[in-house]
Each structure stands twice: as structure tokens, then as C-alpha cells.
Image (cartoon, rainbow, N blue to C red):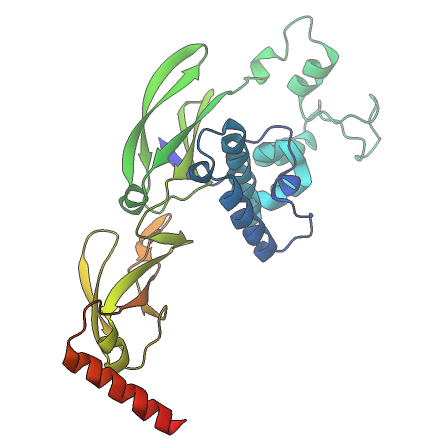
Length: 308
């Protein structure tokens, strides 16, 4: 089964230091730090630079955790073990009723010192298990991860990619379903069985015609300069290829944006909900003027001078 998760694996690292913020940073601070760092180390701006590529992955890793309220709380509490927070808390609950559960904070104290053991398997794993009694209780999960790239169009519609992962020493190819709305820092997780977990870390490649910010998209539309002054229509194309005519108000300015609601990216996990598309107006000035057009422009200039 393929499951989407924004939580990514990050080994022995400090997510806050990776983004250059402190532990009390607000969501806005984290988002701004991520954007600044991502722009600096993006592979497209550092072609062939493996260090920048690795740094870019680390930045996406950190942001994927700290931008999600639930995973951030788990990370703040459990550090590098945050992905196992649910199991740790469940084991702690079982320990209170287990004859093999000890805690230095529980009644009667911990007869083995300050360590906490949540079940017999944990205890034997830490103290030695010459008889193999705890072996069946400690089934380690095999984890493997790789990176996959998709275009912005594929992130819009969802797609299937083929990726190679090495599991138990063997390279295997997997078909991975990428859900609509996926973004940089997202992870698709596959658990083909109860002891294997495969992580596919997603990077969405930049688009030449659209910029993405969250679920919103930004693009530009060229329009004759007289339509910017008098009002008119501009034509634009959505990311899925549909052509839309946009009403342009009179006296619009260069760079002024027109908002098209519901024409942006689908929301991850809820593809029927869409962000917005913002179209920036870019007036086109004529390159060849007739004598009559030149006279009219001169007349406009004279009229403006009289009004000043």
C-alpha cells in the first residue's frame, strides 16, 4: 500500500540548525528560512555541485518535519527518534501494566538504574540475551530511501514513477504512485510487508512558466498597453493547458495581478480542493509607430503636461 507522509528520515542531525533558526522559531520564520536556503542551494542554481545537492536535500528534510505541527512536536520531544514517537508512547503505556516494565519515574523506582525498559525485549537487548528470549519481540524494520523527481505538471495531476532501491543488498525497481499536490520535501512511503519500509523523497523541478508557493500558482500574461489603460481582456493558460480569458480593469499597472480562484495546485490529500492562480499583467509597448499613432501619443503628452 502506498501512503503519503510529509515526515522524512533524517539521521543524527539538528533540523533547526539545518534551517538556521532556533527552537522557538514561528511557522513564518521556518517558512522564510526554508525558502531562502532552498533558493541558495537549489540544484538548478548549482549544476554539478554535489555538496549543494546534498544540502538541498537536508533543507527539504528539515522543512518537511518542522513545517508540520504534529511531527515538529514529536521531534522536539524525541529528537532523532521522533518517527517512532507513537511506538515509544505505546510501549510506555504497556510498561505500566507489564511485569517486565520498569521506569525510574514509576512507583518503587528502577532496580537497574536510570535506564527505562518498556518490555522484556528492550531489557534483554540492552542487558544481553544469552538464551534468545527477547529475539522474537524485537523485529527490526528494514528501511531504504531514495530521491525521485517529478515535473510541476506531474505534481498537479499525480503520476507514477519507477525508482530503484537497494533492499537487503539487492537492487530492486519499484513503481511509485505520486499523489496530486505533492511538493518539495514530501515523501511517499511504501510498506510492502511488516518489516520493510521504503521512502521516496520527492523533488518537484522548477517550471519555466509558473512559480509555485504552497497551493497557489503565479504566471504572467502579455497585454497591449492600450488595454491596460482602457481596460480589456488578456489570455492566459492554466497549468493543465486550458486557455482562459481574463478581464483587465481600466488603469491597470504593470505587474498588477489578477486572481483566478480555484485554478492553482490541488491540495495534497484533497485533490478536489485547489489553490488560486495569480496572473501578473505585462503591458507590451509597440515597436513600430505610424505617424498618426505618434501624433496621438504626443497629444496625450501635451494633455498630461497641461494637467500638472
